[in-house]
Each structure stands twice: as C-alpha cells, then as structure tokens.
Length: 174
Image (cartoon, rainbow, N blue to C red; front, side, top):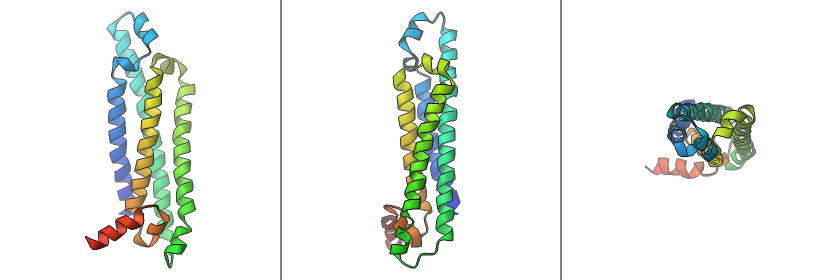
C-alpha cells in the first residue's frame, strides 16, 4: 500500500506537468522567432510544434519515473528499518536527502542530455521554453518525491522525512 501511495502521487504530478508542457509545446510562441520568420507554411510550423512535444514529454516521463523509483527505494528502506525512537529514525534523514538530491541531479542531467542529443529540435524552440520545461519538471519532481515519501513513510520513521511527523500527528488526532 505504501508503494502504491508514492506511485499515485508521482502519477498525479506527472499528469499535471505533462499536460502543462503539452499545452506550452503546442503554442507558436514556443518556437524560435527566427524560425517563425523563415517558416514557409503552416505545415512546417505544425511539424516543428509536434517535434517540440516529442522532445518534452519523454524528458518529463523519464524524470518522474526515476523520481518514483527513488521514492520507492526510500519506502523500501523505511519498511526494513525498525527504529526504537525518533532519534534513530532521524539517522535516516541523510539517506532521504541523498535520494532527493540524486533525483534532482538526474532530472537536470536528463534535461541537458535532451539538449545535447537533439540540437536541431532545441534550435527550433524559444530558449525560454526549455528553461520553463526543465524548471517545471524539476519543481514537479521535487514536490512529487517529497509528498510521495511523506505519505508513504511509516509513522515510526516519520522523523526521517522533514514534515512527515506533523502529518502523522494530524492523522492520529483526526
């Protein structure tokens, strides 16, 4: 059940970010101005917008899949650990932060890989579009990882995730 919680949180955030980027990638403002001036037909513009969508959506999907995997690794760690008190649970905070930083670094690396592996598609787009895409993806992945681990962490390990203890206390009161 805990694995399912983290996957559902990631799917929710992936859907929001992917839909946002799909809408952004479908606008003509997403293309480079010099390309728009030299484009000879609407078909050429339409093909460039489709290429842009095909560039952004796999990047987002790969980033969220990796984040979900790292979040599930965290859930597995929390299921294996058996702390006696909060102090022992806090000792796992470094592992949580390490997985978090690894996820964000991998998302940034994925963005740069996409930039360098497809220079023609990147040249056709507005530079602000790629910055927005990477920023939106990193924000979504950060929130998905954080909330996925908060909702999936056992109460005994809540001290290891910043803010999770508050959520577990609210659950007990409600």
